[in-house]
Length: 89
Image (cartoon, rainbow, N blue to C red; front, side, top):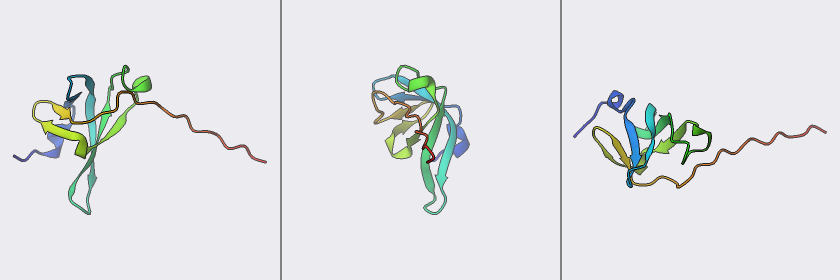
């Protein structure tokens, strides 16, 4: 079964244990290999994604896609690392 890439947009994403992760905002493509590289999720669940920031999910983590997307893997907690500012000497 083939899907149009636009069908992924706004689709809800869940872990395999049924925890809501977010919804697809965009799809990143690898044009050289002609395949989907990752899904960019927005409106993420603040219980598993710190500050509910948008996250990229490798497409290889997708185990099923229909009315929703189910991930075969997702970390228990995603933390946001703040960039350290370099001091000028």
